[in-house]
Length: 357
Ligand SMILES: Nc1ncnc2c1ncn2[C@@H]1O[C@H](COP(=O)(O)OP(=O)(O)OP(=O)(O)O)[C@@H](O)[C@H]1O
Image (cartoon, rainbow, N blue to C red; front, side, top):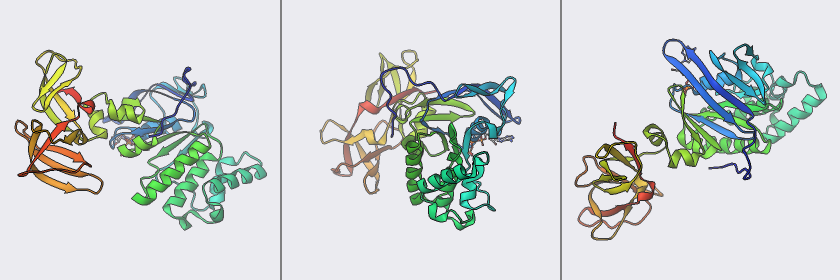
């Protein structure tokens, strides 16, 4: 997770400010109201399940879609508001589409130069040459898009988006068309290029791991709204609700009773603060990695019902007295299973608690 570090002073002025932005699409879907402020040079990952409105928000920012209400400002200039609407090509925003959308009848160099039509030919060629160099495409400048691999087309689309020096680049699922190995590499190179050029970027993804590993800031959406926004650490370690928790991790959900600032369960009592009356029902969310092997005789134990070795980690399903469903455990530690039983303890530090309803 790459966290951007700022000095101890105030955060920098946002480059993009979204204020109460809303858009209804047909009878079934409404986006917003959405508020979001994005700092310069930040890489923001918009993440959420299919249909939550990620692309709609991106299209509103790009100007492909017009909001019903709310405002959008870029570098202090209003792009969309009650009586303002700036056309996409006048927004100084770059866009990389999921399918790259390169112009098939133009060479790679011509594609990259497309947004530079107002530049002098000399300056445009120099800028395109620099971006082709940065994306390792110089040798392919005269080829047409169909003569490039998927990864190369993605880089060409990024070079084209970056060419006019946009204030923000928007990328809609830019790595999803690539197979797994290639995706890792292209993602790494893309982020390196965005960092090197100091580009502010919003990347849409539905992949939780991609969001956590890529974004300086992760914005989780659900049903057209922002559920939580923060660093990957914030969202992973301190999710605001069950939805956010389960989006990024898998958990054992252990029922319990809330009393005296603790959630009392069959696996012990965990300190927590819930907006719940004394005696209210809640769930302890226990990560499989927080279930640790333990040799102490008075530790909890369970009957091993399934065991699968997955390379670096081993996953076990344990049947534990007092629990209705098997407890999942993931560990890298050596295991001592005696008579089919394993002793374990729970690391309380990562346990989360949510009201049961
Ligand atoms: N032009 C439209 N008219 C009516 N409904 C639409 C229109 N475009 C999108 N929708 C609906 O709006 C919702 C949000 O779509 P959107 O494409 O923004 O979601 P998404 O989070 O990007 O999903 P995915 O990850 O599948 O691309 C969906 O339910 C979709 O069916």
